Length: 141
Image 1 (cartoon, helix red, strand yellow):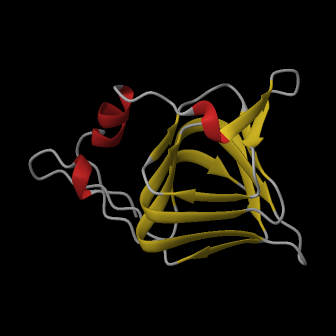
Image 2 (cartoon, rainbow, N blue to C red; image 1 turned 180 degrees about the vertical axis):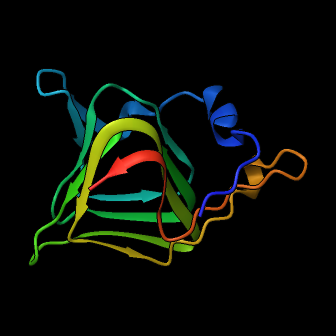
């Protein structure tokens, strides 16, 4: 669950620049996807609302090594029964999908060991928790 008294996460990442280097963009289809089918993150990744959908393709593996993904764009993560999407954490890591009214779709996607505590974003006693996966003000199918 996500527990926020203030939106500390957005405040923190508002100052950060979106790292586009992980993605390739299709402006015509209004989509973006990872450049490779394996992504190992050793630092947090913030994805703002780009007015586009993040396509996570079947067979993709995302490893969060003490890193979190905060995504304000819609997500389409549709794995196949014989070619699933895998998202896992090493040590600590989590995913927060938030503040997007466009529909996100997730199926045949395995989440494992996601357990982030976003203490680095704390302001006084405020705390945001990302467990297996959290969706805040986001439509997910």
